[in-house]
Length: 259
Image 1 (spheres, rainbow, N blue to C red):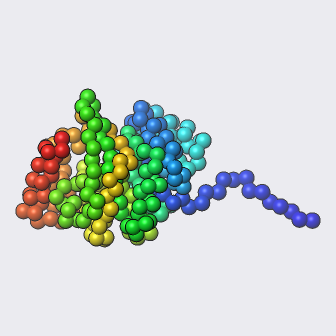
Image 2 (spheres, rainbow, N blue to C red; image 1 turned 60 degrees about the horizontal axis):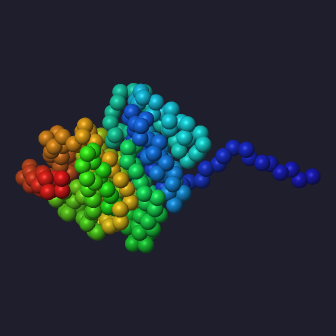
Image 3 (tube, rainbow, N blue to C red; image 1 turned 45 degrees about the horizontal axis):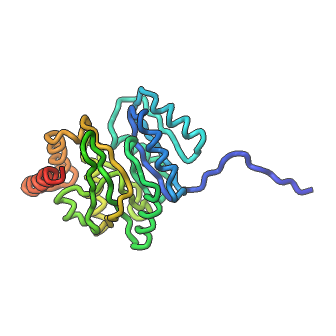
């Protein structure tokens, strides 16, 4: 007699993409952010939502969505709030996908984001990419952010032209690369580090994401953001004082020019 065993547990294969989503008190926006991942034309992904001590029901929203979609994982955290970089790094520790992508809990991807971007990375043999995106501002017109088609570290030192929500990197090439545990400019520091390990990143000109800029966010304060940029350039990027001052001046002029 032949006995056939059926496995009743859900077995997950290794996904192509891991999406890292830090969140804190994002109950009003995180559902839509996750839905923009679920609506991707490329469906071979996992999403790890790393909570940083929410007390507004954010964790309940994620838990409810993950019950219906096993590709979504909630990492609960009840200690001292440590910020977005630490939350991303906790998610990165659990990542199993080859490609690492980033999306904040109040931002959105357009449906073809993963398909178009990973397709371009594979066809151009590039381990690091970003894309154009819209900046949606409160009570003001949207802004288009377009990176250069080819980014080098030297070019990026003239100003951060990379939106975090658009980045994908190949962990098969770089390994898992955490962000520095600093309050601001941790993403910029990571891009500069990756461009030490590879000569160029590709910048897709197609708009693939939407970033919501809030007037009360940390990075909206130009003085605080400038101090954070200076600190990152000196400690993380390792620039001497004069080079860091020149880079910071370019940042300020670029911010004034772009709005």
